[in-house]
Amino acid sequence: MADMSKELIMQNAMMLCPKIVGAEGGDMYILRMENASTIRTNARELETQIKATALFENCREVDAAIVVKEMDQFKVLFKIWFSHFEKDDLEDEWGLY
Image (cartoon, rainbow, N blue to C red; front, side):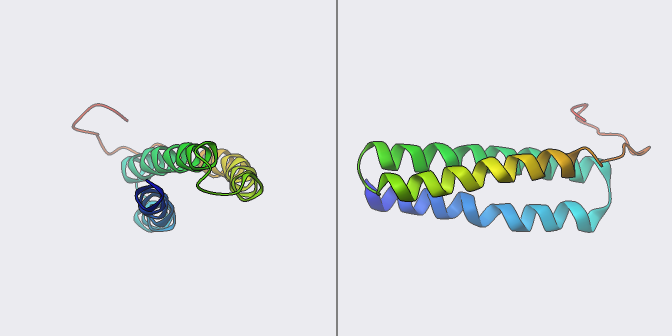
């Protein structure tokens, strides 16, 4: 279980930076929103996995607390970043954004 948790944690963590870069590189509202949604999902899963790993005693509580604290700070920065998205004229053919 510890190995599986480690893999899931790493998968989610490794998705954050490329999605931020992708959102900024495209400068399209729909692309930014899609990437922001993916970032939020991966960040939430990462936080859940860290907490579960600590709960099942596969990592030290102090280490889990450090990651959770960093995730809390990331959420604040994410909200600031997200607030600067400006809707453009491109249509989302799925109607989500």
